[in-house]
Length: 179
Image 1 (cartoon, rainbow, N blue to C red):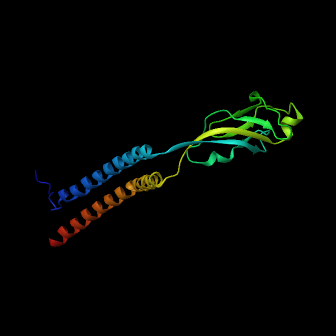
Image 2 (cartoon, rainbow, N blue to C red):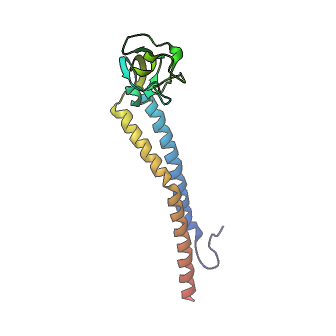
Image 3 (cartoon, one colour):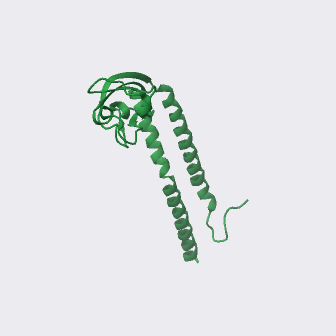
């Protein structure tokens, strides 16, 4: 099959560029997937306990996050045990909620007891998290970088289309000027 048109422009010259673009796209997708799977394999999960962490704003509607809630993959495994800081009275678990993300807040719409609302709480809890290690952090950076490059693929595709259009126009003008 002859891929030349009547003007002499060879469209077969674009085929390697298109194939290369497709191979690069497939390689990026496979690479990001493999790195994500590898990263999960080298993740080191740990757990810790905190005793008597002072919380100052659990009585309002927004609640308060525990201090360690910002660590990587934080997960509060058990419901915390909270006491009133002023008199060490146990606060019933029916009076507050705790999420796995570490948010503790009062369930009371109004203050049922003065000691319950106006004093700080001391909460004891355990949590799980991902330990920081060099291999895990490096693989995360590589995965993020490859994802950023993948975001550039549409721009690269548009540039290739413009290059093809310009090469067709230039080829047409060269053939026309030879006449």
